[in-house]
Length: 256
Ligand code: ADP
Ligand code: MG
Image (cartoon, rainbow, N blue to C red; front, side, top):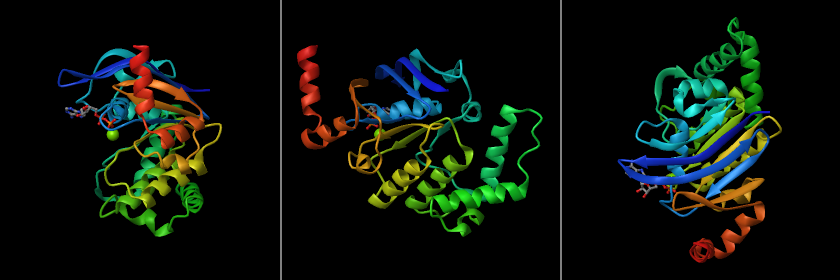
């Protein structure tokens, strides 16, 4: 059983502290949601886990399979079994979705077994078709150049197809406030719902309360001021929908 263990994580941007001690454990098989108002550091957490160079970790650790992943390159994190969705995926002209996925999948297989010669093409094709069917995707998608001319919804689909094919232990998805319409939100939600199970742990970071109408997380956390200030079950998302974040901020003040 793998788990991602974030301990006392402090992160600064340009010398300004944004994350002020985040603690969170995401286990395989669990779906966690982090919600919170704008500007509280949700994307900062996602970018830090993804290894974005602008985010300086000043304290704390993120352990996965006995390694502090903060010391690893992004591709090493991926090969270990952490899926990091890109918020703004780059287009790769000349590389089809299928080729990209096969390369990534084989890199992951080699990580587990250095002798691995890669998945044979027919087997890979079968796998890809199975996953595209699961996600109700047009098969023509596999032959298109990765992200080139993709709509917002198609980029999301490509991301979810990666998730389905690479079968990571932990997936981290940041749905920032911009550019996600309700259809793209549904793509993410349906995809996550189709893929969750005992082998996949998910951390969805979202500004949208309505995403949780579609994804049913086991745990909901609220981030305010760079810390997780409240954690609970799915009913916490309902309280947030009904009462907003102010009651938590008030509670914080009285406890402080
Ligand atoms: P959220 O995702 O919760 O809306 P962010 O993590 O994007 O919040 O931002 C948290 C804070 O960090 C905000 O005050 C934001 O202005 C600041 N911030 C984020 N990215 C940068 C950056 N690249 N340079 C300077 N400040 C940043
Ligand atoms: Mg954000």
